[in-house]
Image (cartoon, rainbow, N blue to C red; front, top):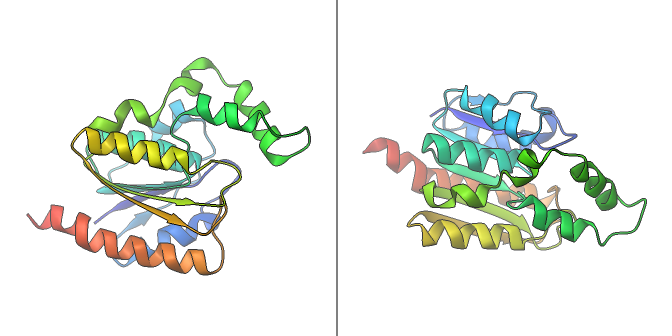
Length: 195
């Protein structure tokens, strides 16, 4: 199995190793430098040959859309699925906070990047694992809850794990994510390719 793993804004391939590592036991893992906005990110992701796609934060947003367009299984951690909803939440934070800086970055985006949403593709997704922190201060867990509901409404299989973590996992949360990913891939993804 070949997996594509996408990091979020301001991150790097090295910083997303916690998500790539559990996938390495199933085959080749591609972790490119991916500091691009959503529209370009989706176009770039679609050029890769992959059997599954995973991502964190903005990388998860791109993974959900690319997975839907290619009909491949997706793992998304702490992914915003509606950027306008995300902006509304971030706009409540005071000047100088990381959330306010992200809000200002989102305000500068062209409408095509703001309006490109995984929710538009939810009914095309068949196998999805969503992981989100209950203490996420950047992307609230409602994004994953709403996305999973939409995928299920469209007849897809969505598994949602809410963990005791912030936006970027550390410590025990990394170990837990690794276990969840390995178990889900073995149960849901490998079975697809064995048929």
